[in-house]
Structure formats: structure tokens, C-alpha cells
Length: 350
Ligand code: ADP
Ligand code: MG
Image 1: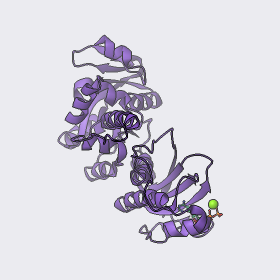
Image 2: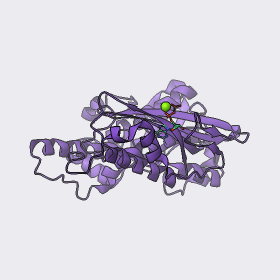
Image 3: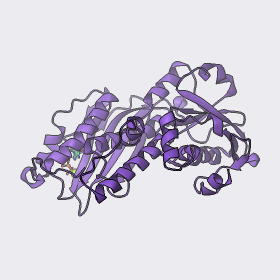
Image 4: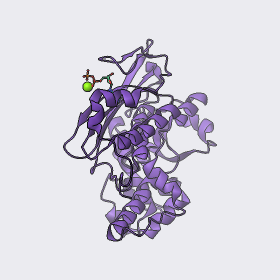
């Protein structure tokens, strides 16, 4: 698990800042019509072609947001891009450009930065997004990555968090809780490794949830699907902090309440099994785990027929008036007020 051991190391000082930037960016082809100028001048030049511009930024710090003990740099680059693209998708828009800024401490050789950029490029190519700029600095300690993503949309297509109406159906894509249970697994293997470096990590049969943690996917396909079936959500958010926190954001900003049904929350069998292994309630993993990067959205009841058979979309509840509060109806029919955190009470109370 240790990083960059027994590998070729090229000191970043040998290249210098400009050498590094051109080394990292020279092979990246631009594919978006809206990119007039990418890397290489004082600023990128973009053409919104009469549309509204959506911009979102995230910063990731080593030791706070990621742990290089079990995060391969290539995966980290990939994830840094995906979590940003997810924010543009959550506005019902398609991301088209990103900028990537990095702070590097002296422990990172060129080979490490190259790995990081490999992941960045795989993500950009897969999602047809242009890398159009960034910044490169040194950091005293650890790795810092900040990504800004940009997308364009017609004003009428943009979906905010505040548009949910009473009676709307609450939908979520994919399945939830996987990234969190994957993280539990990686943290466990890290501890075992630190105690005995000769023991290899045992992640056998757990690929899905480990991938959910290390290699999330922005649900651009869901944005495209909704367009295809002519459904415009009334509100939308991406699931970065857990289902409970996200639905509370929608309800608060829309000034509404909600009823969520525990039995409807989509869980992968591996998430379920692994949560149980760790003595965690799988529902709590979905509600409070986070990092699944699925899309949570509300639609008008009239759109029910258009989405009811969509394999990858689950209807998990409905919007109520604000006085009814935000509730989870458990499998046994008990009504629990939803909280963004503090699920222990719920777990013990069941
Ligand atoms: P300035 O001194 O004006 O900030 P830089 O030398 O930092 O310019 O950047 C030169 C060019 O390289 C710019 O187009 C910038 O956006 C791009 N760039 C710098 N760092 C990165 C990076 N880490 N990834 C991608 N592009 C970068
Ligand atoms: Mg700069």
C-alpha cells in the first residue's frame, strides 16, 4: 500500500513549474465547440453560445478528504473530476469544461503527478469534458486538488433545489450507501496493514462497494435520460453527504416536508451484507453515509408513468406540506423525523 516505493522518482524541481504544466497538458485534445482557448494563455476563453453558464468548485485536501494509504492517485484524479461534474449534473446540465489546480508537497515525484493526471484525463475523456486550465503550486504538506467545472444550459432547463411542490414524487438514481460501506472496508484493511505490512488487503468479492468509494460516476446519463423521456425534475441535488442531508436541503429550500419510505431506499446486496458485517444498519449507511454521487430529485405526479419502469430510478417517497415535517417511515411502519446526523438513536431504537 505504501506509495511510490521501489519506483522511478523524478524530482519535480528538475522540470520546474512550466515544464510540469506543459508535460501534463501536452497530450490533451480539446473536444468542445464552446472551448475557444484552453491551456496556455493567461485565461481560457469559452463560448456559452447564448446559454446560461453553470460553475461549481470543490477542494480536496489530503488527510481530510482522501487518504493516500488506500487511494491510488489515478483513482483520486478520476474522483476529483467526477465529484465536480456531479454538481453540474445536479443542476440538470451537462458539464463541458474543467479547471484543475494542484498543490504538491516535495514528497510527490513527477511519476505521482502523472498518475493523478492519468485519472483526470480518463474522467475528462469519458465524459467529453475539456481541461482548460488550472494552477500549480507547491504545498508545505500533502496534496491539494481543486477542480472547477463548467456547463451550459438553457434557463428553462436548469433545476434548482427549491422547486419541490406538495405531492411531487421523490426519486433517486442507482443505489445508496455503497461508497460509505466501501470506505469502512478500506479503513479496516488500512489498520490491518499498519499493524502488519505483510498482510495483503482482503477486498475479495467487494469490488462493487470499493469502486463506489474510489471511483464514483457523475450521473450525466440520468440527466440525458430525463431529457430523453421529457421529464424536468421540479428540484434536484446530488447525493454527496447522504440521502437524509440532501432531502433536507431540498425540503428546506422548497419550504416543504417529505415522507421517505425505508423499504424503497435502493441498496445493493453487497452494501447490505457489508454494512451488517460492520454492525451498521444498511439504511443508516444510505441516509448518512454519503459520497454516492447519485441524483436525488422530485418530479410531478403526472410524470409517474414516464419514470415508473426506469430500471435505475427508484421512487422513494413524496413531498408534503412543510408543517408535516421530514419523515422516514421505517419497514415496521414507525415514523421517524429525518435528521442529517445522529443516527445512533434511530439505530438503537429499532
Ligand atoms: P499564470 O502565471 O498566469 O497563473 P500559469 O503559469 O500558472 O499562469 O499557467 C499557465 C497555463 O497553464 C494556464 O493556461 C493555466 O490555466 C494552465 N495550468 C496551470 N496549472 C495547471 C494544471 N495543474 N492543470 C492544468 N492546467 C494548468
Ligand atoms: Mg498560475
